[in-house]
Image (cartoon, rainbow, N blue to C red; front, side, top):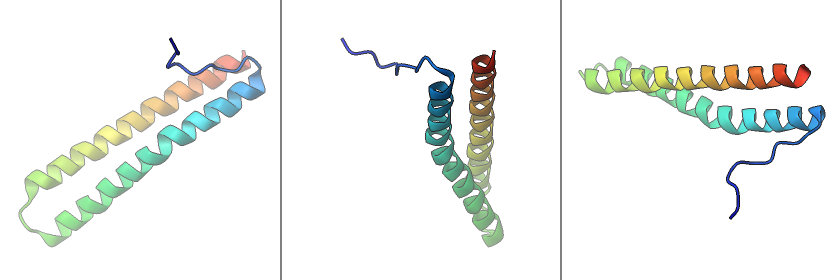
Length: 85
């Protein structure tokens, strides 16, 4: 049976390259989600259509995205610190 967990390289340079790849793969789509939610928030509020439910949902999406981005950053920074030890 094949493992779904990727093999993490042994040497520090390869680990840093792998973490950089993970950072890109995780943060790029997340940044797009956050940016789109901000754009939609602006549009909904500027139209003033009385769509408070939609605006609140977009706030929730944005806050959740920011929280996930922060967690990813913290985890990757911790992993980088462990490589340096």
